[in-house]
Length: 399
Ligand SMILES: Cc1cc2nc3c(=O)[nH]c(=O)nc-3n(C[C@H](O)[C@H](O)[C@H](O)COP(=O)(O)OP(=O)(O)OC[C@H]3O[C@@H](n4cnc5c(N)ncnc54)[C@H](O)[C@@H]3O)c2cc1C
Picture (tube, rainbow, N blue to C red):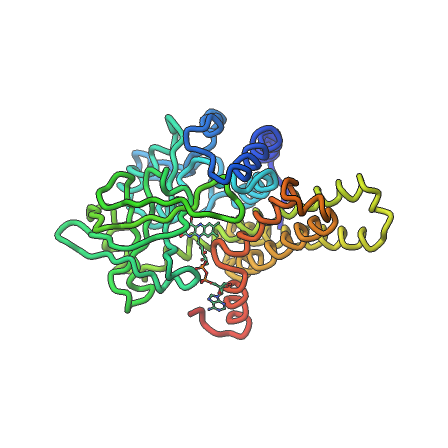
């Protein structure tokens, strides 16, 4: 198993360190202080576009029908996961909220690439090949009454002639009020559970896509997590992700799980990034306050560092398996269960060591402490990962 990085990835990591120190961390702290996300017209986003970020890894097929690839996904189904993972970790080291606020096709990109028709890829991903301005895509599965239990979504998809009519409420969808399109998951019949699921590409401005409301969050305030309503939102039949045939052949839910299995190790690595930032703050404080002579403090710092290192290795293994198209469900779940708890321990240790300096609310460690909590929740809670692994361990099928 080779976790070495190539020169291009090393260069990108170095670029992020400069960007992170000079822009991402100050922007994240500003958003935290103001309690609102970085606005979409902020010059930072244009800077990212100028630097070549905010792009899709998808490329149109060549005239001879062969799929073209970008450097990042050459030869892989899910791209060069290890490089993406390390970049995700490093961005989150500087600020995970700012990292997620970055323009790009978003969490729905993987599902569009794996499930979408050629026409859908052309229409929704082409603008992200060489974007003229910062553009966002969003993903909306969660509802006020359906989080972990995605089979319980109630947003209805009703066929009406050549169109579909969507009715329901979505919540906590990242970047959705600023997105060109939102990949919305709905059900044709709630009694069918996952088999009733369908995904739709809903464009900004479509009538009935309304009532965007940016939710309050305890941390990660630099990016918007938004609720919205689908009030008889009429979507052309051509916007059903993958087309009718896809759902006749496979259960509707499969596409969402494909996405999660490739992204859970990324989210876990983001937690490692926040954990490392917390540990650095804790060590800097311990040094400045002459606390490092105490073996109990050294022991706790070492334990936090060791757990973060172990979590990171598990993330890399899950990514390596993905790069080699090998099943990674156990490693993906393990990394997602382990990394946020290791990161939370590092942030808690930082809060304890800093004492009053941390509790006042204006120190970075206190922000990291609030930021890290969400990492156990997003994209499958730690508890749900443990449920998945425990069933697997004793040979029960996944429900
Ligand atoms: C910052 C942030 C960003 C997000 N971004 C997005 C996004 O872009 N798009 C999107 O669709 N969603 C998004 N979400 C929503 C996220 O996916 C859900 O919050 C998550 O799935 C958990 O759902 P829930 O909050 O409703 O908790 P619930 O599912 O109600 O769970 C509550 C608690 O019960 C536990 N629990 C639930 N079921 C079981 C079980 N069977 N066995 C044992 N324990 C169980 C859970 O582990 C958890 O501890 C985001 C959430 C956050 C916090």
